[in-house]
Every structure is written in structure tokens, then in C-alpha cells.
Length: 395
Picture 1 (cartoon, rainbow, N blue to C red):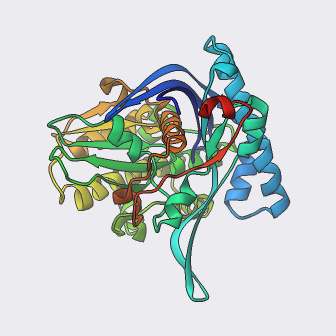
Picture 2: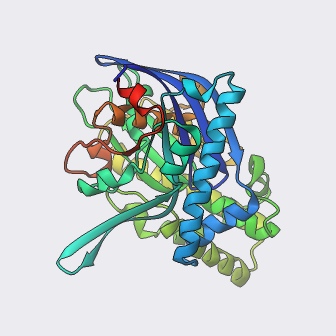
């Protein structure tokens, strides 16, 4: 297996805004790992597809729709790959590998009794065989089950990438990624200390969901934090929200729409009606809940392990100035940098991570992070669907 590969990474996250596709060149020589971005683009989801995913994620639809969505998304992922390489001035025949996260429609990190067994599960759709067939490129995906089988939660996965590319010698860094869900990765300066990583709770998910409710679907986000900026934080509601049991749960932990999805947003809308709150005040309060839940998790579970020299933030949340202002005040005097300030494109980071996962899977390199997921051991995650280039790839 060659050490230098051209790889496409595909990511569709809990924000449901679209498919991120990145084209990278990856090489590993001993302990030295390098990655160069050759192209990136996002393909927005059409409104009908977003609604399909939300219905399936909420448990409101049946097996036929789940099956249909799996193959439909496979087609869209494949089209994103072909479009990406064309715009980057490449041909698909020059691509060695595709790594796809897929679209999570269910994530259940809690043990559920089943007879004399306990079961955890996570389910992503976006059929790998369709991607491999349409592109001709060997495709790797369905990464989470490998970690779950080894006793982990199958999440968070991005900290493996953070450890490889976002650390800084001599400094303890906290990586904050705010997508639909927020997660933290603590990279201690002291050699030999384990990486600590976990989901803190909501990122953009609740704010986005409220804006959709307020506008009848016309707005998908609080762009530039304008709605929150016009409101006032309702302290009593914020205090009640901070009683959510997930926030005090000890790591390893991971979450998604099963806790902070549609039912949670419905409850917020009931509070708005009962207390006759304005949309602006509720948005400001939920923005404060997002920031405070991040800080509280950091204070409770990270600072007890060691100091933080700097925070590096990425994801859609960094484009919300109200949220970022709240976080900067809470973390002061610890500086908050952006991914771009350490040489990473915040829009492309998660897709880059799945390019790395695919690269390591095909080379047989363990690519989970047990200290983050709770797995009993390091394992090689991912399932491989050979494309037409497979014989060439392994020769």
C-alpha cells in the first residue's frame, strides 16, 4: 500500500446544512503525518432532503424511507466527489480513496438492556457501495461500529484528527468544535498524558432549530447572531436548562438529536408561549445556554486535569459573534484562537478527519481514540468497499 495517497473526505453533520467534500494529499513517514488540501466545497442540502433526515432522525418514519434515504444520500455523496475533483482540476482516476462519515440518523451511546446483554448503537446512512460504484474509487466508511464493538461510544471521532494536527509542543490546547453539537478535545502539553475529548451538549442545533420555528423554515440559523443580539437572557430559564443531566455526566460521553433535537426544541417553544417570551429573548437565552454548557463542562472536566494555555475554536458556531463573545468572557484570560490561526480551514476540518480515517483504515492503522470514546482498546475502524481502482491500489 503506497504511503502517499490522494483522498476525498466526506462529512455531513448534525447541522444538516449539506455535504462537505475535501480533496487532500496524505502521506505518513514513520511518526510524521502530512496532509495538504487540494480542493474543498460544500453542497447544500435541498429542503426536502433535510426534512427527510429530520423525520428519520426523530423516529417518525418507517424502514422504507430509511432504506431509500441510504441510497439517495449515496448518490449525492458520489456526485459531490465528482464535482469536487472537476473543480479542483483533477480527474477521479487520480483519486486513490474516499472516506465518508455518512449522515447520522440515530446515535444511542447509552447501554440498553437486551436480555442478558447491553446494547449500544449508532446508525449512519449514505450507501458506500453506491459511492464506490459511481466513482470507481475504493470507499471507506461506517467508522463508528468498530469503536462501539470494542466497548466505546463510537464518538466523538474528530479528536483523533485534532491530536494529529492541532497540538502544539509545550502548550496545553483545548480544541472547541461547534457544529450541531459542541465537543472539546484537550491536548495536554505534558508528554504521555491521555487526550481527553467528549461532546459537551448543543452547538448550533438548538439555535438553528428555534430560528426555523420562528420563521416557518425561512431561516435556518441566527445569521451573525442578530436575533440573539436583540434579546435579553432570561436567567431563570437558563438556570433550568443548565439542570439537564447530560451536562454533569462524566466523560466519556457523546450526544446528538436524541437529547437536543426536536422534542427539546418543542419544549423550548412551549416555554416561550407560556411565559410570553419574545423570539429574541429565547434565542439569547439558548445562545447563553450553549456557551455556558461548554464552559461548565470545561471547568468541571478539563481544568481539573490540567491548565489550558489557549483555546482553538472551529465549526459553524465561530460565525456567531454573540456566542463567541459570551465564550471569550467566560474563558478570559485564556485566549480563543480560530482554526485558521493554526493553519486549518474550519469549514473543511471535519471532512479532512474522515479522509485521514480512510487512509489509516486502508493501511491497517488503529484510528480510534479510546481515551475519548471509552473503548477497551485501539481498533481499526471503518468498512472497505473496493472500487474499480482497488487492484491498482494494493499492487
